Structure formats: structure tokens, C-alpha cells
Image 1: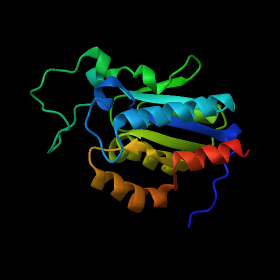
Image 2 (image 1 turned 90 degrees about the vertical axis):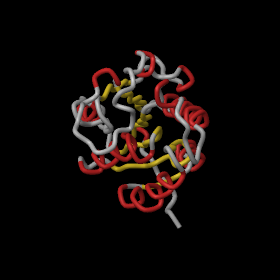
Image 3 (image 1 turned 60 degrees about the horizontal axis):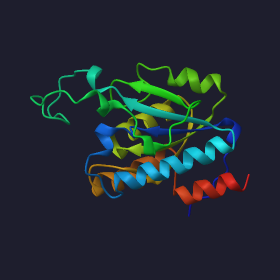
Length: 193
């Protein structure tokens, strides 16, 4: 049984991964992308109300790193996605004052100033949510843990391309990198502070 969650909101940031047109339009499981976006927006609103840092991460499809891989996530012969594919969906709740990080590959730390922005704000704990569980979220979580940040995963505000991949990450990998909680559990811990 997991321990109750205690968050110091002065040193905790919410990081929402890839809630953008080109990703929320994909088929996701176990949670529909629309639900993940709505739960992420609700968390962002609560974090803002409590004076905590809210960060949105988006991938710039036009400038993604091109690496030699055996299997690509997209058809290499397909035309490039339109510019709007890299833009955050309005339903994500992004507001003026939120930090927006633009990345060029799966993880939000490599090639960005995310680590510096977190240190500048005195952040010690990150709450992660978004799409996709075992791509952008997991890559960011592994880097965050490696850099010494405590990590909390919002299980039902995170989803993947299939339920099996999501469950494997949430049940096998993420408990070893941090703490896995529901949005309700995270909200309860924030409202009780």
C-alpha cells in the first residue's frame, strides 16, 4: 500500500507532456487523450491556484532529431506534419505565466533549459502527466530521477498507444523511479496542505 502523498508546493512543479494537436489526435489507451488533457488542465489550474510552477512540454515536429532507428513512430515517407501539430491544444489549459519547453526528441531535458528552469525555481519534486506514458513521459521521468528530482506520476492523466505499454510502465518501471498516484490522490494531497 503506497504511503500518503505529501507535496511541498513551493518546491513542486507540474510538468505536462505533449498535450498538442499532433499527439492528442492519436488513438490512446487505457485513457482517452481527451480525458488526459482535461485532467492535466485541472491539475494545472490547482497548481497555479496554490502558487506552484506549471510547465507544458511540446515536441517541435519540424525540427525533431533524425536518428537511425529500426522502427519509426511515423511513416518516413509521410509528408511532414502541419505546424499546428506542434501547438498545445487550448483544452490543455495553458496560461500566460506557465513555462513552455520545446523539445526535439522524446525527453524534455535533453537540448532544453528545463533543468535550469527547475533549479532556478527551487524545484525538488516534479509531477508528470501527459502522452505518451512510455515515450515522452518515461524519457522525461528517467532523466528527472537521474538528475535527483523526486518524481510523482499522475496515472490517470497519462496514457499511451496501448494499454499493455501503459500498465507495464505504471506497474513495473515508474514505482522504481518515483510514486504513482491518481489525479484524485494528488489533488487531495494539495488541498490538505
